[in-house]
Length: 233
Image (cartoon, rainbow, N blue to C red; front, side):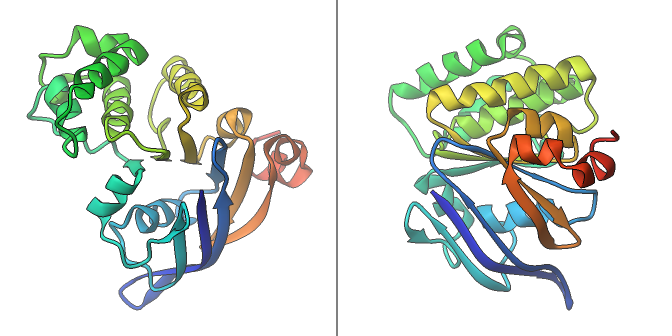
């Protein structure tokens, strides 16, 4: 579904991605783990089109995306829930969701909203409240639900567990795992390496802008280097 070949990215003159290769097959949950500053967020920003690639190729469902603008990538089925949530804090929960569905004006939008509320019942309780008043965990739920309103075939998730209590992290990871049943493919970027690998099919390890390891998630969990460097075991 998604293939990245030799992807490079820069901030000014400083190159931060040094030839990334990865792939995501339809129906998979694939995670990219790595320390803060490894380039994980820049990778997702290049995939969604909000940061320009300096080299390499990105293809999605057979179509080259490298020069396709971000808004059109959403229409092709590639949506992102960004780091830091970036919800519209001065709008209500429901208004945030409706903005996530800005490409659509059909009757299915109402069902999509109902599905979002079924996925995250607390959002239904707060549907008419200003989103800036939600807790951090509730804002993360809203960010994911808003991205799903775009009806993506592939969801890019950037650090959904950041700064959240363990019980909320477990709930969000359960939802991410359940997206498989909805035919949503997931590329998950996470510092919580163990939690991400537990729900993923495959994983990539990223260090200073390069992929240094990859393989089945259970094999990475069992690898002594990963256990020492990222799992604290």
